Length: 344
Image (cartoon, rainbow, N blue to C red):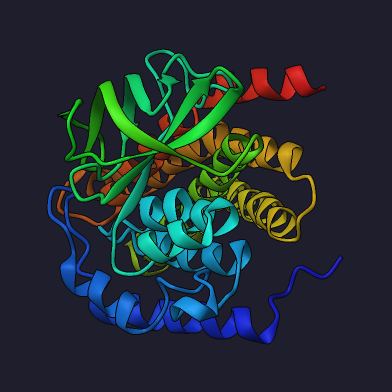
């Protein structure tokens, strides 16, 4: 099988990498990188999936995933995951023309999918009765910046996705600290809402969210590995570069295998989802590998840096913090394994 990108995807990857190398300033997750976000927007990288009639490029999941991977590669402090994977993609795939016209453009979107002790439930406890939503969501990214929340709900007709204004009546936001920044717990008390899409919208929203999380994670582990490899190449001990020591070489080789496996799993899942094929199993495998192997790989990278790996001013901590939050967003390794077991 040929996993090489097509010319358009290669161009997107190169452009995104160039923009982020030039504009991204890293950060500690507590401050928004406005310059990098604006540069991505100016380059047209935030509207790749937006229909051409609305000023976008009319592309899809894989092209969006390419951008997210590059964002993860530099651990940029921008709301790309929530805006694109949690917002633009589901609205493009399920929104009415009127909803697309209203929501796609310069408006920030995000999704509220997780509930207390229940990551991305297929039958949420959050309920929609008529045009009102009630319930509690956890781990909501950038809820304070969002124009609309895509909320997973259960209606009398089954699971659905509701559009809710986070600044509207009946919505309470509570900010909580995470490893890489902040997220929000959102409570809905009969908050006004409207439906997005039909019976398959929620399952597809979950698929887009997991694909985006895995794409960001793919980039983050690649960035951490590149940083570690450069350290091992340039740092000397006993007159030799660290990379020349057998024990070090074995550990970084294991990290490389983990990174490449996540890359192929994420790429396969995003390709199948974007091609209209059933990507459920591929997404479950990619999410499990992210939650199970990526945190361990980052611990290896810290270990190989020695004392430098403990320095919070060194860039490696941004990658490990990001990976910790992504693994939690998908529910952790045990939850993802349970999902695979149920499908098996």
